[in-house]
Image 1 (spheres, rainbow, N blue to C red):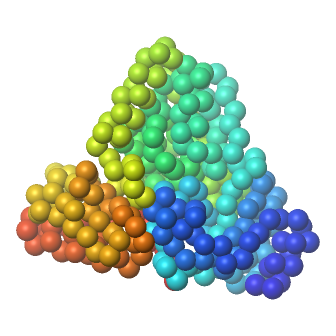
Image 2 (image 1 turned 135 degrees about the vertical axis):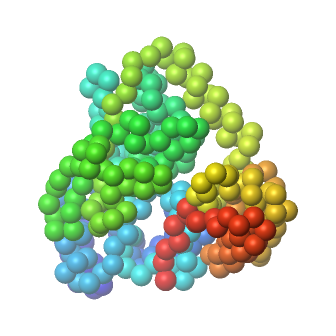
Image 3 (image 1 turned 90 degrees about the horizontal axis):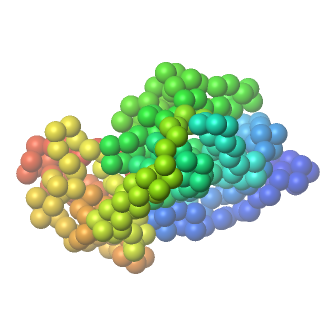
Length: 299
């Protein structure tokens, strides 16, 4: 770690040691990362990745932390946040090119400002564009795969490449990036010209649905479980009488059973114990196994 820090300092790359990760996740849960590094361009990212590899320091790329459950014992190695040029967007006709660090909500409002439709479903999802591509984020019948036409990445060896839409291997909550260690840099979206008022009406409708049905006033990581074939996770959980079920500071939301919320002081273990209780109960009572959607990481 000492050698890595020396390289970062010599190249004026911003870092912090023992950074609490609960400050960087929507769940507000997580211990400290050994080192938290902020990079502003591809050169800084490439140098940082190489320095980590040369010094056997594990790497995790962080977006908005909206689908993460991080161990209370923290994260071994480096967490890298994409800033600077990774938060830039450019619009060219009906196409938007977007850095991986951009907030998904900003991509949606940029599309609206330019009279471009297709991203309304994503408005209100509290993640980054890179995270949306990684997970093929979706809601209300729309998915990232419907509009993303390519993604540019940095390989672990420092090479830059681009996946086309077909090569991205999008499926439900999946992309090619789940199968390799390539880092998403930018992605491109092909949209459809439309009346801005009509676009805004759809965005407002989806946002109002979220506010009405989801427990947005508590920290969470969004939907905890993937949708099982032929059913809905939240409905199954509610049918099993688990709404309001609590383990420590973690609770199955009384507003939407598909969410586990942090009602105060929840630990990673609290959430994982509650996840297992829900999985076991739903499996026993309905026959459905609920696969976890949120990513648990750390020590």
